[in-house]
Image (cartoon, rainbow, N blue to C red; front, side):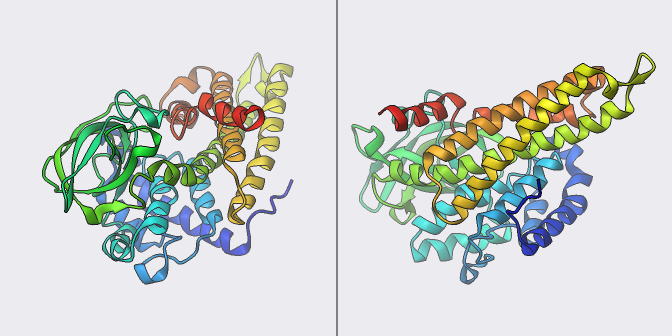
Amino acid sequence: MKRQLYTADHEAFRAVVRTFLEKEVLPHYAQWEKDGIVSREVWLAAGRQGLLGIAVDEEHGGGGNPDFRYGAVLAEEFTRAGAPGLAIGLHNDIIGPYLTSLGTEEQKRRWLPGFCSGETVTAIAMTEPGAGSDLQGIRTTAEDRGDHWVLNGSKTFISNGILADLVVVVARTTPEGGARGLSLLVVERGMEGFERGRNLDKIGQKSQDTAELFFHDVRVPKENLLGELNGAFLHLMTNLAQERLAIAVAGIASAEHLLELTTTYVKEREAFGRPLSRLQHVRFEIAEMATECAVTRTFVDRCIEEHAEGALDAVHASMAKWWATELQKRVADRCLQLHGGYGYMSEFPVARAYTDGRIQTIYGGTTEIMKEIIGRSLLG
């Protein structure tokens, strides 16, 4: 079925993204995978190309276009290119809304120009060694000292953790803590007591710098409180729908791309004197995956439309996230199997997609948490 989601402007933007990937990302990606981190230069190149801060107003250096469909195009093309290490989606779609919707005018003037140019790489620090999806378990504390906060604690699994110049940290700002005692504090590179741990060794997305962060009596100015004091839980819940939808967009894009690659492969690869595509089992596998992808694409596109109109709720975002990412996982496994031994070789895209995509059902809220959200909405 022909997709009705995008306009000519979106498709023109898609062409720009593909050119950027071909010139600035793919020639260097293998080296970044070895290095465990992308270059600072590619962030600056993304800024020059207008790929950062698309939704940020022009006054602060952005594109002035809040249409999420541009973010969806970025997610689709980076996924198809097999280049998840450059976390532009995290920067634009997850962290950007916190700065634009919660930031004061002074904060926007201070942070957004660098955010849009690529000079300021961002991260958000929620997960801790003992607290993942359960935000109420956060132990990082911020003590009020009059004109500043004193921040203590640690975070882990933080994407962009090594490169980040600006980190939005979720911390307890009341002694009792809990969901209603959390605030967002912005920690900047160079603040005394802010240290980065090791660049974590993951099974996939090797070029995405994922790190541990440590805060030892970090003095955070009161001017770096983002949003309302003790209001982080509500702020996080408000923005999670877009984060989960962005993950779903990447999930279905990956599944579709793997299906395309595998369809081509089974037509060309021969076994027992004939193409694999002539075997009934293979045809059934392709038919099942194609149907599942078509159905999922229809739902995710509808969610994108709803979100572009400001109408997507947390429940449907959770549905899209868990369903699309679980489909991605299944398709990656089945496509690797159909590739046989070649599918297990790292130079084949299906192998990289298998390991790169495995995190999709975990970050942004696990599949189990998504089901809990949906179940509560239906059953109370």
